[in-house]
Image (tube, rainbow, N blue to C red; front, side):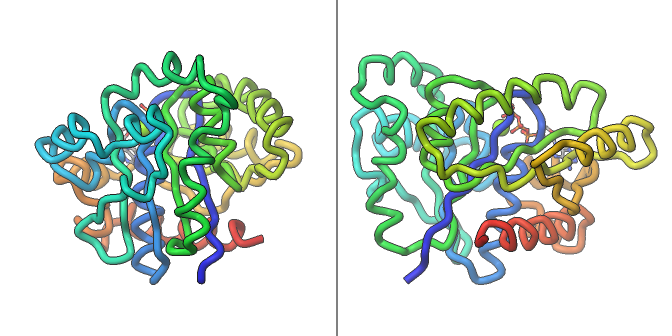
Length: 263
Ligand SMILES: Nc1ncnc2c1ncn2[C@@H]1O[C@H](COP(=O)(O)OP(=O)(O)OP(=O)(O)O)[C@@H](O)[C@H]1O
Ligand SMILES: [Mg+2]
């Protein structure tokens, strides 16, 4: 039986590559024979859309088997898991209704731990090696729920001039979460959307590698238009084009994340 590791991908900076990284690391792990559950915790539904077309995603969002309903009704989330077309890879879809989640949590008892409680049976079942959660670009009670349900945090950072802005808020928030969920650890910072030809790429790497007590993952994801094409086709990049640069880089990142997740 697997000892399930739960890893969330969070950064309050929008567009930093959270959903893309969560989807493609998850898919890469599944092709390595690991059992993976992906959880889409963002109202934008990007993780859901990476695996299902618009029509199917909206059908799930409007139905009663999405994460929003499961959390608001404080259900065991086992019943909310849907299989993807890929072996070893399941998903709990999101809903656009997620936009109201903060308001819904407000009146709940122990409101930071609703997601942890909802995932308890899934974790105890040992069915999955990894649960990967895609967080929205916010820092509120819902993201606190996501972090409190996780063992490890990966922070995707876009190698762009504004990519580092707000990272200090992220670390402060993490320290707050540690007060109520002390076992949470930062697995590492993942550089995404990098262009080695640009000066700020070097700067980003230098700044991030000089941070104390935070690991910078050595695997880096560069800009690759195949990523967008794969998303347009509702497929992880490796299933869309196995030999693409992004597919190979995400596989390397998945292996590195696996190495540190199990420590
Ligand atoms: N390696 C890449 N090459 C090219 N485009 C990429 C790459 N990674 C991500 N993108 C694009 O960048 C945009 C932002 O990526 P993504 O949605 O994964 O970020 P996010 O952090 O989840 O955003 P949000 O904060 O809105 O949830 C998307 O349009 C995606 O297609
Ligand atoms: Mg996203």
